[in-house]
Image (cartoon, rainbow, N blue to C red):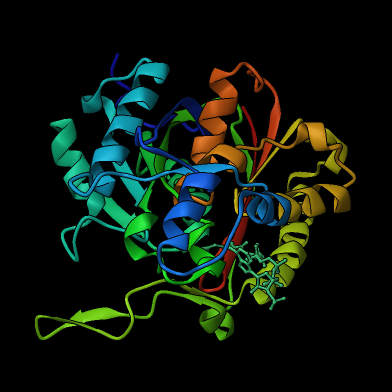
Amino acid sequence: MKPSSAVSPSHRYARITGTGSMLPPRRVSNAELAEELAGRGLETSDQWIVERTGIRARRFAEPQVQASDLGVAAARHALEAAGRQPEDVDLIIVATSTPDMVFPSTATIIQRKLGIDGCPAFDLQAVCSGFVYGLSVADAMIRAGTARCALVIGSEIFSRILDFNDRTTCVLFGDGAGAVVLEASAEPGILASRLHADGRHMEILCTPGTVAGGQVVGDPLLKMDGQAVFKLAVKVLEEVAREVLEAAGRQPEDIDWLIPHQANIRIMQGTARKLKLPPERVVVTVDEHGNTSAASIPLALDHAVRAGQIQRGQTLMLEGVGGGFTWGAVLLDF
Ligand code: ACO
């Protein structure tokens, strides 16, 4: 079925009608990674990684696989769940920090792989907050009447930018993609969203290299001051959650599921504690996925939906935080 040809004033909300995800098949446990790092003279252990982060394993993509490959597979699953065809899509936003190439955007590559053309398609760079940023932008475009059926995708191959000689970062990240179909609706839908950034903190989490004159200039591998990121993340995730709740006229106890960026179980539990939410209401996939940056929230959402945890009609709080520094939250009725 095609979406309606004009946005009726009554269709003033944007609602998630389908979710999807894709993980590369290669699962790398902490023990396997520790063994590989030992070969480089670096000491780590399953115990250290689990205790400090909650991560037990991550997926790594094979060298020939690109962010668009994972992203298009996640998008197809989301379209199927929504009962939509690729030709119904009139907006594609891809949140990624690991695009296929400098340009064109991964969004246009996914558009081509879906076999469609004409609709706007662009990448959005807000690192681990990218999916929440993308959802908020798509919501605004749908409410403005410029889109009716959007694909919002987070897709990352972070293994390509990890420094496997730095045990403080390479154990934390993984590859994957998640997607949602967001459609104009008479019913909510997204209730409120808030986005923030503060470039003064850019050095605490960055991949500072670039391409110039046919060469990589600067360091193209991820750098992070973990403790500085940790402190800032716990602070801003509570603040932005309260800001969005207030904007929507809701209370923390109205949240059925908190779906935070899956970076570190201690950050996620800390945020839930501050909001006085029991740990059972936090969706956790960091144990099996690691930190998949912009893909982590839609991946967690899709896994919880397909596992039957998240039900239609429940209220979800999605929260992202990442390099830039960027952060944001979206409150929605599912
Ligand atoms: N294995 C074993 N030991 C390690 C490892 C490792 N993989 N990594 C660090 N250590 C050591 C350190 O060298 C240090 O040793 P020392 O005491 O002898 O100096 C010790 O462990 C403690 O290190 P800390 O950095 O203090 O460990 P901490 O408890 O802070 O945990 C971590 C580090 C997991 C990185 C944490 O700070 C964190 O999760 N930070 C936030 C990350 C995050 O949320 N990122 C989100 C955004 S990601 C994005 O936007 C791309």
